[in-house]
Image (cartoon, rainbow, N blue to C red; front, side, top):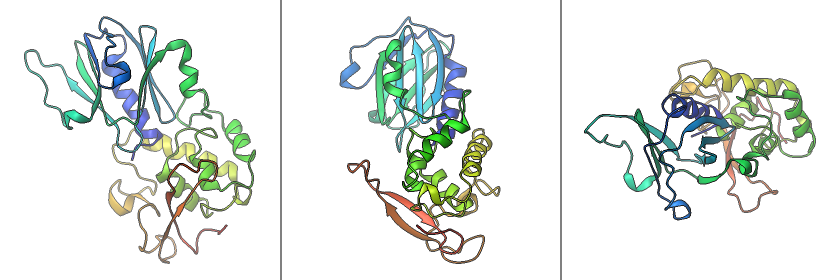
Length: 269
């Protein structure tokens, strides 16, 4: 599941093959930009902002969000031979080619091109970026504490508070902080510690191909404390991990998301 660390890695890999290069072709496979041609334009930079990915190209910005299933694949250039894609062609939303490589965005939840002057319209609402150069822990705390009665599991997912946390990290952070995801922000025993832990978890995982929040092997059940482990014994106390759905009243149109917790280790709402 793509979270801030996943998008950071995607940006790093795309930087290596796109930054400073001219596009030899572009193919936007969405109706809004079907006729747009950025070939001949230079890619000045590629960067992540929380779970958003931005490519600055000739005064335009290609803005994408991976959502649940999106991914950018990179295929090295092979003269006289087209690379075989690893994902179905019908899921491709954009194809960007340079002399070095072809970058293909598959199953992107958001895919738009906007003038560079309007980039704030896409990402200006985001809180401090956990993996960004301007990370500001105090500002993240201020935003979280602005709604002390809101469920911490909802506040952590709100990218307006701090950017980069997805459902896996919010569940793991709540376990490590010994608080139920539905407990109020004001009930978190040590909110600054939780925010600092969020930063450390994303930093330590940003260079790993497989995410781990336990310090154990980065694969399977050993990689998580509670996420996806409903009915399994808690690694800390042995009580069975529980599962439910948590809806956000502030966004009634959004589907409720999975929460996992240990009923002994975590303080309830």
